[in-house]
Length: 218
Image (cartoon, rainbow, N blue to C red; front, side, top):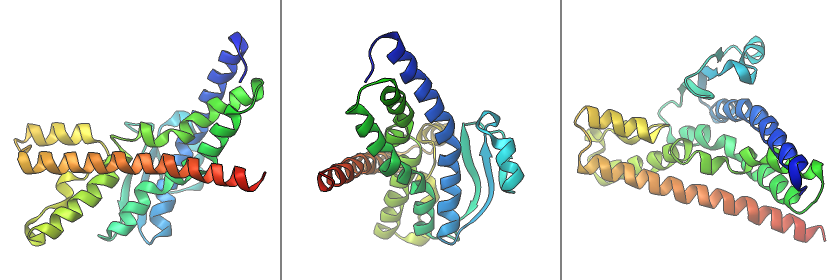
């Protein structure tokens, strides 16, 4: 990659452009994952700086403004965990391609274009790391809570207790209600551990796919 102040500027500009493009695509992928597997989407919030007003002209479920860069706040999985998992994980197909391949390819090259491309691909490739307390915790919590229901009386087990797209808010909420007992603490820890393992697996799979494609093309 390019060195010096030009390299730093190219990296920063690429990173800003990559992030601006990735955020709305990430959120739209959540909605697409839900719809493609039979769920319903009623509200997808996107911050205005990411083109929410333009998207809302074409997609009726898009709302302008969010407490986050974007968040799928209105969706119905029909009680099916398969749909829920697809909804949460769909954006990380962008990590597998083009995220990790673009990052690794640009890292092998020199020049300002490669440096800008490296910066632009960082949010796409490293999204699982950035989402450990969000989407990947939520994925792990779906699996952990379903396992908890299978090991106990499912009718008396509230699977939603451990499920959240923000583990810090979940812990604060349970603590504030005096519900952060040993069982819930263990369930949240299990969800977080599973989420970390899944994030590592996503990064490994993307790297392995790139290496296999590179090897096959030589």
